[in-house]
Length: 262
Ligand code: NDP
Ligand code: 8X3
Image (cartoon, rainbow, N blue to C red; front, side, top):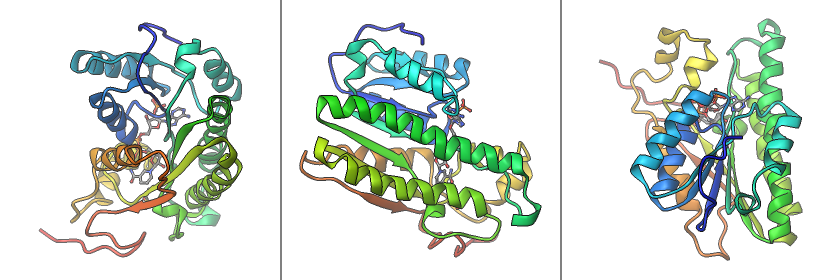
């Protein structure tokens, strides 16, 4: 843990997967609205860069919490080891995740399946569990889980990635029920195609294949998703958006697109 900032006096958001894409855009959005940030990701250099950028732009405190969400002990030690002031989290954006590969079921790689299950389900749970313990003690909080439209309907070659996002959907519902007595809001956000580093990661650095996913589309941007995530936190205390799907105008489902040529 890199505790390089003064303890916060304002609202705190903890964002996993803040080194790129949705998480990074959420960091900027929440900071712009005066939140102090706890930012996570595996790439420490990017966390440092983001912290410098945000602290240069906004008058907020940023705490870097680099860990791999798949490492149960690192997750637990990092969150339990937070200074007391930083444990008073108002919002968790449980966002770290990835797709690895897009292959027919019988041809897919077990390594790809393991990394997705370990990150999107087990890592997701390690973070959610540790943070919900803190929020239950303080009697309030808002957990925003990053699902996907892939967690609402499966598509060809989506197999295990879709299954992990169906798990996020089921767990969001379960968490909402189990955390009800603590006054904790649980929101699942389910984006469709958004141009981030997601496809580059999924296709293991193959830029051409990654680009094809967005061909003929004006896809969602990370900032579009951050806008929606932030909006969900602005509603009155008694109002909770439970589940929200968001696509670009040219996408109607995981497989129906209105792509423009040329
Ligand atoms: P990016 O690849 O741009 O960002 C992913 C983030 O997750 C990075 O900050 C990465 O950080 C972090 N991450 C990945 N694995 C781990 C890990 N083991 N431990 C800690 N952090 C990790 O993708 P997006 O921003 O698009 O994706 C964010 C979430 O949104 C994912 O859960 C994804 O499934 C979901 N999603 C994406 C959609 C899209 O089309 N882009 C649509 C719907 C949902 P680092 O590598 O530094 O660890
Ligand atoms: C990412 C969206 O449709 O590529 O979750 O699976 S999709």
